[in-house]
Image 1 (cartoon, rainbow, N blue to C red):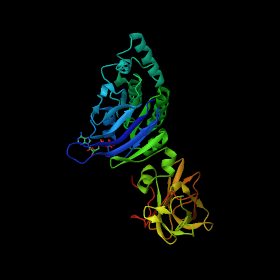
Image 2: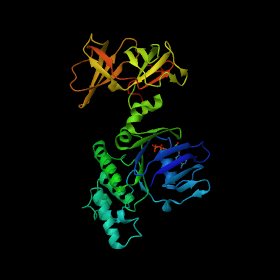
Image 3: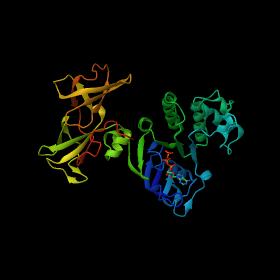
Length: 370
Ligand SMILES: Nc1ncnc2c1ncn2[C@@H]1O[C@H](COP(=O)(O)OP(=O)(O)OP(=O)(O)O)[C@@H](O)[C@H]1O
C-alpha cells in the first residue's frame, strides 16, 4: 500500500534559517492530500525534497514503507516512482501528446506502451488528441496531458505543484474535479500543493496547513473548517467574524457578546491560558454563515451598511452597537435590505473558537486577510 509518511523534515536553502522545521505529514494509500499554505511557507521545497530533487537536512520520507529519504539515505529522483505535475504542465514541446505520455514507459513493449498511452489519454478525457502537439492544446488540456504522463508509469505517489494556477477560474473548477477523478481511477496517492483554500477544501481527502515550515493542522476538510486548531488556521481556511465576549454561566460554556449570548465550543473552558471562568474576557470566532438576518425588533439590532450581491448569495455588512467594525453576513436567496435599513441579527450554532483575552486589533474582522 502506497501511503506517504513524512517525519521531522528539516531543510534550509543556504545560510538562511530552515524553510522546513520538523514537518510531519501523512497521506493514506490512494488519498489526495492538499498542502495548503501562504506563498513562501515552503510548499515547493517540501515537494522537491519528496521528489528527491533536494536532499533533506534531517527527517524521513517513506512511501509504502520504502525509505526514500533518511539520515544517510537519498534515493535519486528517477528511482523514487514519483510522478510530478508542474505548475504549467512542462510538456516536451517537440513531442506530440502521445509521445509525451509515453515518455516514462521505456520498460514496456511497443504494443503495451501504445495500450497504456491510450488508457491514460482516455482517463483524462483526451482520447482523440494523441497526435496533437502541446502548443495546439489549451492550458487545461496541457495539464491533463501532464497528469496522464505522470500517472502512466503507475507511480506510487503523484506530486502536483499548483497545477491549476495558470488557468482561469471557470476552467479550474472543471479540471479540479476531473483531476481528482483521474487520480482516484489511477489509484495513486497524491499530494497537491496549493495556496487556494477553496481548492484544498473542495478536492482533498485531507488538508495539511503549513505555517513556518511545519504542518500546524492536518484534518479532513470539514473538520479543518469547523474545528480549526487556532485563530490563524480558522482565518486561513475561511472567513471569520471576530467578536469580543465575556464568559457567562457557572459552567463557563457561553459568552455574552454584542451579538447576544453564544454557546462556546466543547473545549473552550480550557484555553491556552488555562481554565476560563465566568467573567473572563474572551475572543469569539464565528463563520459568517452562522449569522442570519431577521426582521428588525426580533433579534439583536443593527443597521445595514452595505450590500454586495454575488448572484448565488450576497454579503450584507451590518453595524452593531458595541462593535468597532461592522460584521459581514453571508445571505443566500433574495436580499430585501438596503444600506441604512434597520435589521435584526441572530447567531446559529456554537462559536468556532474561543480564546482567552481581548480581541487583537482590528477588533471585529470579517473576511480576515489571508
Ligand atoms: N533554491 C533556493 N535558494 C534559496 N532560497 C530558496 C530556494 N528555493 C526557495 N527558497 C526560499 O525558501 C522559502 C520557501 O520557498 P518555497 O518555494 O518552498 O515556498 P512556497 O510555499 O512553495 O511558495 P509559493 O507558494 O510562492 O510557490 C522562500 O523564502 C524562498 O525564497
